[in-house]
Length: 211
Image 1 (cartoon, rainbow, N blue to C red):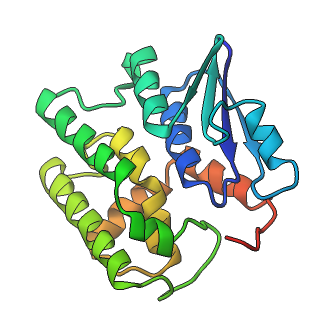
Image 2: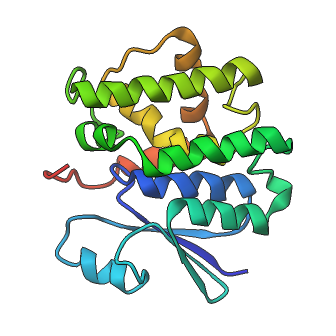
Image 3: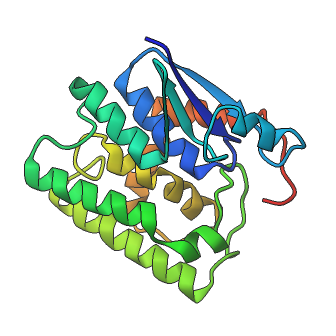
């Protein structure tokens, strides 16, 4: 089973982190190849593997699949034993709903608090719009955790956690206030072995001045 996930710089590529965590959770054999962003060869390297000119992109037995959420859905179908969505239908619908909201929304948070998992920028990016997005994310988390009791949004790790994982890094990087419940959730996500591996890899990458 030939499966390769192409990702952008692990320090900065929030979209790449999402399917990376989902793929790692399946336990399926795979290879991850990183394309460092903002280099003279970056565009050509990505176009060689991705029809959209963007990462992430998954190659599997001749199939080329792009878009983080689409990749996660495909992984769920290929590896149902990994239970990437909650087994309960109602909870599964809720998980899909908040994942889609993360996928399509929170533009100000993305713009003003871009992912940089190795940086510490407390207080920066705290625009009214970004903080409003942050409050909405925190409401989503609190409601899910109140029902599931944690440690993840729907009890066990799911695609919903993969979709929000980059936000956990943003909240730490930019010093967004978190109560004990939300901090425990952030810690749970960032203690995942796959996340720790991602962060270790990021430490070996070049810092990019435009990020």
